[in-house]
Amino acid sequence: MAQDSNGIFYGWYVVLCGFFIMFAGFSIINSLHSLFMVPVTEDLGISRTTFSIALSIAGLGVAVASPIMGKLLAKGNMKWIMSICVVMAGAGFMSYSLANSAVYFCIIGFVIGICVAGFSNIPISIMLTNWFYEKKGKAMGLAFAGSGIGAAVLSPIITKLISNYGWRTAYVI
Image 1: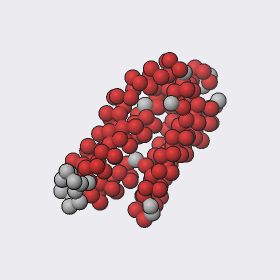
Image 2: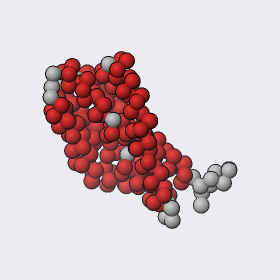
Image 3: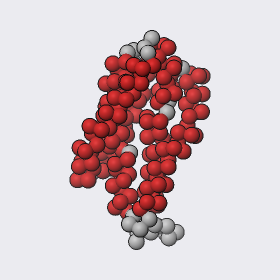
Image 4: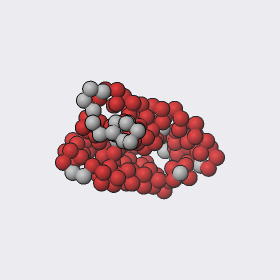
């Protein structure tokens, strides 16, 4: 077993990284995006139903991309794929600040969904499966707990950002 100088199994560092990916990236995009609903719909004059549909398009992006990403991640350079997907998802999320219609949210949301498939559940599962055998369930549970904990911790912060700086600036931050 690969261990650091303190005798800690390297796989636990992978769990920690997975936790932070789920905490920051996944929870904001998937769990907390609804916090923007009221300010965006009121400002753009679109219905909440339309905005919800636009956000659901990101889920469609994940669904379409998952089988492809699974194959790419298993055979390709996972670090590069994840890095590119994180940067593109972050840029896409920031670009929501430029939106003036639901169509923009749909198009960018689909791209973000593709990227989410490339940096969250699939690669984390692959990495943890490669590092763990006996404690795989525990490792995955801890890594994926980042999503729920991130939603709980970041919800009041994002709400405060939206109320203090507006939805466009909050998307950029």
